[in-house]
Length: 265
Length: 210
Image (cartoon, rainbow over all chains, first blue to last red):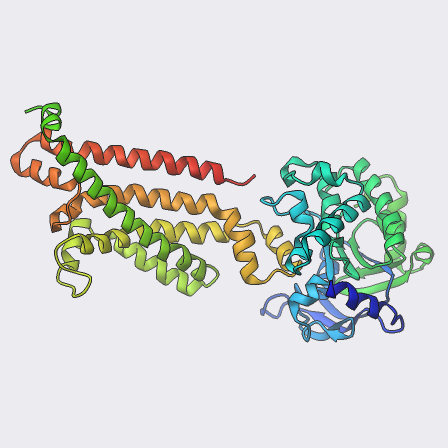
């Protein structure tokens, strides 16, 4: 519960960015190869849904993983809620950031209820609070709490698993949500359903969301702001509704590929 | 003299030896599991320690069992004639499969799941006990199963250093050139091994995840 209180008090402070990249470079390993991220500076404010768009290898997933310190910048710093990620207690940092990935990563040995309430459980919420929250988040993602509580992940469809993944990320009511190609592994119909539902959910939740995708349509549908990345750098950064009119050649390429029936990938 | 005739006249003795045998195996396995599982958990993710520990366990495995029993006799404290020395030798044999399976099982977890666990703010310790161990449990049991079957066999040699067990009949039978007497030790030992293999196999399948 301490987590919730901390968030309430901090959400009144809207001036400061909630996430800020300050001249961040990231080189994988210690072999000094080509940097995956090269001097990225970016400020993300409370309540924004920022889509990191780009092809694979552009550095968007790495940029996202710097936020919850799954990766640490080689130079520069990432400031989350006022402190550099390296200054945070990494466990506390991560428990305040929901995380949804393409392969979901549900724990196969935990049932749905156990998966969803994992972070509240780690935070030692009282049992009743945990159960109440479980019901809330399951309803948010459109799954019947009682029906699914005892099911194991391998007894769910891909779409249901992804919904449970979102419910899990929301369980401890973190102010920040990170999503890495969250709908990428779904069939087109399920994906469209989930994208639409999630778009509506995101509007109601007023969380800060950072979403990684290579799909322009998804970016335009869900983002309040789109950051286009290429080769470890930010090449375009605009509100979603202005993005399509940008003149940057790579943006034009994305728009063009979106309009042609083939080659959109 | 036939096996059945010998069995009928000596069944009390055979049962006593079987009980002795089981006790040796049980104590040795208890110790081997108590050492092997935590040690495996400790060395996994520490490549240097892991290769040292597995290397040592491998070496013990390659020493012929009769020789190992012999080597241990003169060692003070753990050595001497009797069950204690036998248990030490059995533990050394039992260790490798447990250690190896613990390392393999704990490190073969889907990286996506480990990343999700870390991203949710689980500590290393929570990841070990709430994710790695439960997901690897059938592999851990498989190691204990292999190890138990080996130990039941090797324990027959414990008789050579006066630790008793079913090996008593085997050594006696060899000395008497009597198949019936050898079988009186070998058949119950084989049955024990098959039973242990079957039961632990059931457990292994039951604990498999997904």
